[in-house]
Amino acid sequence: MGRVASIVLVTWNSAPYLPRCLAGIAQQSYPDIELVHVDNASHDGSLGRVREAFARVSQVVNSENLGFAVAVNQGVKIARGEFIVLCNPDAFLEHDYVKNVVEAFDRADARDGMATGKLIRARGFEIAPTDAIDSKGIRMTRSGRHLDITSARDEEPFGVSGAAAVYKRTFVNDVSIEGEFLDEDFFAFREDADVAWRGRLFGWRALYVPDAIAYHVRHVTPERRREISPKLNMHSVKNRFLLRLKNEGLYLALRNAPFELFRDLVTVSAVLTIERTSLPALGWLWSNRRRILVKRRAIQGRRKVSDRKLAEWFR
Image 1: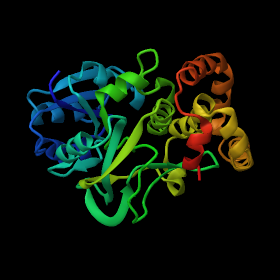
Image 2: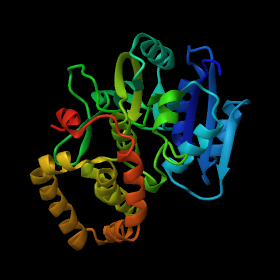
Image 3: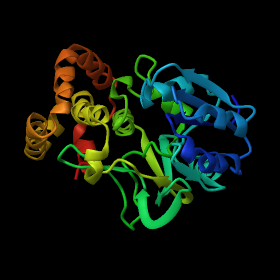
């Protein structure tokens, strides 16, 4: 396999953002780029816009919205690259984004398997930049939350945001469980934190590459929760528990319990009162408890890093 970088683009009614996103992909200075496009049953012309912009695109067209995680896995399976680049439709990569990340990988340790550049918060379909940092990677908290790093200080991230993530193929192959790179039970939200946690358990690390610049329009924030569809909010609730049920060991669970249990109580109380549309999340977790346990055993059985060593990341 050559040093191809495969950009995996997942769309679901993403047409307004595609002109800018596709322009960013087309201008990449890295010489060996392929575009893999997976469409989740868009009805706004997204499919045609990508075909018009890239004559040699590889496409997967789903007849229904299968979710972000499934679509990424479909793209990864047909991608040829040594590097897998996830690019959201509402992201715009600057000219040297892929090149700078690949060069950073070349300088880094072999166990650095995931990387992100500096994502700058943007707005509108034209992806106009603001002065705010959107993400320099993912950090973990003791309350069970994962947040984007937005501080001015440069630091090693726990993992990388799926909006413009770059993964080595060796990382993808190593962390995949039963052929799934991203856990398809997540559907949408938190799948990037899940694969980062799994990678850390398996001994991988993450890179922050400050000279790789991208722009991202962030739609999902806590203050905009009421604007998000009930289905996606349900998956968000489900996934906050699923993330820990699969990856968290006993030491971390006990260490973080005072913080996690308080936030769990707040979440469950909200689901039982003001956001009852998310109640199916709790039912899903119970109905699928055996499948979750099988995945947990597969992950914990392969772990190389103890919870005591990982504890420093949960602040």
